[in-house]
Image (cartoon, rainbow, N blue to C red):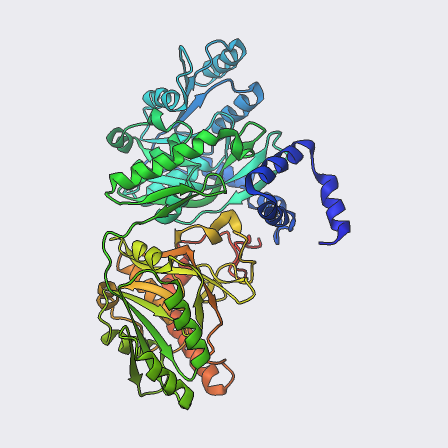
Amino acid sequence: MSSGKWLQYLKKIKPYNIKKGIRYLKHFGLKEFMIRLRERMEPEEVPYGPWYEKYRPTEETLEKQKKHRFQKAYCFSIVVPAFRTPELFLRQMIESVQNQSYENWELCIANASPDDGQMAAVLDEYVRKDPRIIVKNLERNAGIAENSNEALAMAAGDFVGLLDHDDLLAPNALYEMAAALEKDDDIEALYTDEDKVRADLSEHFQPHLKPDYNLDLLRSNNYICHFFVVKRALIEQVGGFRPEYDGAQDYDFIFRCTDAAKKVYHVPEILYHWRTHQASTADNPVSKMYAYEAGKRAIEAHLRARGQAGEVSLKKDLGFYRVTYPLTEKPLVSILIPNKDQKESLKLCIGSIREKTKYENYEIIIIENNSTTKETFDYYEELKLDERIRVVTWEREFNYSAINNFGVKHANGRLLLFLNNDVEVRTDDWMEELVGNCLRPEVGITGVKLLYPDGTIQHAGTVIGIGGIAGHMFVNMPGERSGYLHKASLQMDYSAVTAACMMMKREVFEKIGGFEEQLSVAFNDVDLCLRTNEAGYLVVYDPYVELYHYESKSRGTEDSEEKVRRFQCEIEFMRTRWEKLLKKGDPYYNKNLSLSKWNYSLRAR
């Protein structure tokens, strides 16, 4: 960045933000601080402020919503634990509920400030004007969990929504909830997208545009957060807030509700505005360090409840976590590497496996595909001296899917690791990490983070619809950056990952019929992942395994008429097979995000 731009940026910094920057510097260190500073200074491709003004519902839309009559007019109880809430914030919170276009609600406020006469007077004013507002004045402040339970005890509605005492609901929030429930009465828990708003409401910023329910992302971060709505009968089943998780009581509550819910539904609309001010966790993460320790314990409790072993650790980015799954067993892993005339690439790949792999129970199967050079075959003879390495020969034309299906027939492993010959392993415990994830009963496939040799990202998960059919996320972003809401560096579920390095349960591979051989070059890994999802298994992106990818040297480019025609045929095959998904949109993405960019940019309105 030029010195002129630096000066322009520095002039805009407010004193409070300087203090915030100093805190971040102390926490992250200079190198990480500079990375985050550059990320913040880069302009949004589509600025959120103007985008949001076009996005928010018009008065005409809200009036139509008010006139709509639902067959099932569920009552929503909005529960609010309030403690020493500034008068303006309190009034704005209450009025954001009163301004709902859906009118069947009650607002249950537990006031834990018995010595705050002004606050009591304001609450009494609203209670007298609106019978839907119910206030219970508590004798003392018993902590956020107990105060929230007092508010929950007041709730009589069919569904209960959680609202912080200084935040705001969008005027169409409850309408969108009711509309979702009208279509599907199996839904027992719902959540929405959200953004942040300045204390004086002058600016909306940092939109959090979420995927549909994502187990591994939830274990990495409480991404569900706001606005969360739960069937009251489900709360009675799982219990309310637990005081031992104060500071992360909502995280623990969300885990228990989503684990028990018949169906969890995501409403992909920005319906909650999280107010930022100096004391709020939204704007000052280090203000509540105890909350992050409580979050760690909430994840641990969730894992125990599901009978899942896992070691939870805090990441440097506060509020984000890493779960490491220990090896309960060490099954044979078959590493399958197709190769044609790429001795040096293959040698680098095999060398990195030997150097970085501590996990001992593996075999390597080289699938020879029409090589012609003597040096390649000489290298094969050298490799055969290692009893863990075998070379099998594919004698037909190049077809990536058929080659790997052929290789699996020669594999003995319970776990299959599909690996390009043009990758180099960077992570020492890469195999343990992949096996730990892949052995989880709900997981079918685990993928990794791939970097170009210059350290920029080549793959950090795959989204359906990007570029037409599917595309990798965060391509060309510096590898040390973490991207939109740290998603490049968080374990999470995706619709697909690349087979350049992909581990898969053999039983799942065989159950779904292996790679689709009509997809000889492109999208075969995407199709395999989508069928794995369709069969009820998760596809996990694991950023804690990194490899360099030297990008498909064996295959070459689509530079002939025949190759272009074949590529177009494979595009058409995917469009036909996955037409419904392509039209509906990737459930692990968000409809408000761009399909022409791969960095979680806003979709232009």
